[in-house]
Image (cartoon, rainbow, N blue to C red; front, side, top):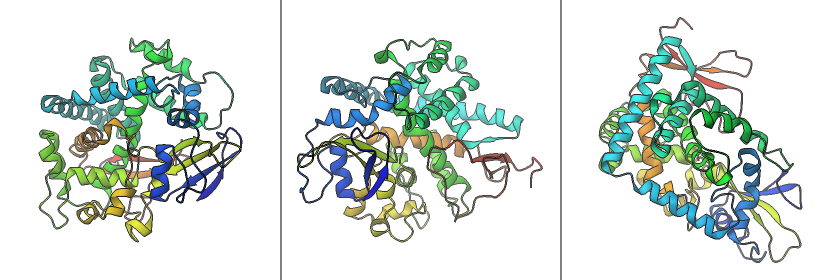
Length: 402
């Protein structure tokens, strides 16, 4: 257990953080954070236990959804809506989705080719947001300007970081989002109508995992050449069969395992918080399930737990399965935890993989001051914290930069 200083706890200025899988699952359920039950039970209802730490997101984004409400009926309504939404993706919808993703990435790469270089995460953010607006808001792609998408992405990141230190009441960044959504003809006047209610959870599930997975499967020197045909076949026909189809190489991985390993190393939510008032204590406390740390424990995942090795899933143990929780834990798993989330990630990774051959493109590290130095090797650790600083730039190999 790690004890950290934190401004979110209502009664104490600290947060208790755990990486043990058994404790993490209990925290996710909102029941306790002790293995032996010595602390008693959490006296807060689950909806309040989850909603209290997320009030910073209400202030920052003006949202009102299943993650922020203390009303159980509202939470169930949001969850049922999300389940119904993802269930509409049948074979034809997935085919259309993959075609749309391929088209969006193709257009993005044409722009990048003209520019010569761009931060990889910016390209992923633009495409991810466009795809979400098309699929979940039925917007015409013609009206989705790159500049607007990038402004939304940057404002989300800025407000998310700022919200961790904001303690005052009232919304912080909602006004900026209102203007951006008005340009897309989306209503955001009332919290329940705020597009960010849907946009935030979907976008945050996608973009960082997709960015890291692209780096691992395309640009790492240890990336296997047989992975790319798997991704290409899946993009052309994104069925469950192609998602599960194994490569012919010695590691025998699939698109599913490429995505699963990316979700292990780079979970969409690194830490999940619950406010708990244990029956044995006088005050409530903020506790966190450290998902990222849990999914990298050497005692469970081995000495190379920090490395991207999708073949590890060919011999997974029950302990590993229990310690794998990128979409939370039962019975409150994210509705995208089945095949929807991983397949959507796979579609976007495949779309970029088809347009970023290493014979034409490379990654160069750019630090906070704008100095470009260093290339990716198998020992390079990728940043997982939400930072506004160093980035990986994709460059054309013929751009003259050494």
